[in-house]
Image 1 (cartoon, helix red, strand yellow):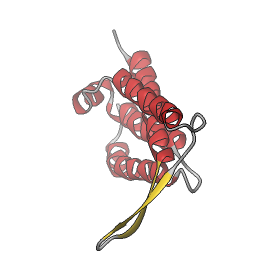
Image 2: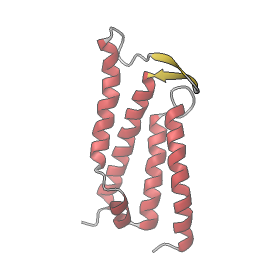
Image 3: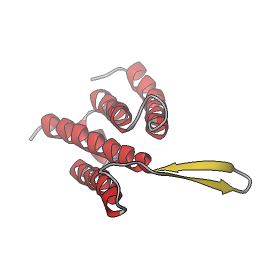
Length: 138
């Protein structure tokens, strides 16, 4: 049984941690961060909710099967690597394109961001599947 203070602090910390995890993911191809640490941060937010609120709450809030997130991330990361081979480059070669959008400015699109997103989903899916499997009461 947890206290009201722990529940209140968790409700405040979890959205901030998830936003921080997404910012780590988005900044990862140019700055420190990336898919791995972003996925670990997201999983830590969900695990904090598990510790404070329990497995029933997590199951009611997240009806996801984390194995599917793992598989989707693995397919995305692998297809980014093999996609470079289809264009005649080395495995996992990164490419970029700069778009000039009106009212926004220049936006840099990088294929490494797709790879980071795949790693993010793999880490998130595997860690949360492990938590779910070890935390089951059954």
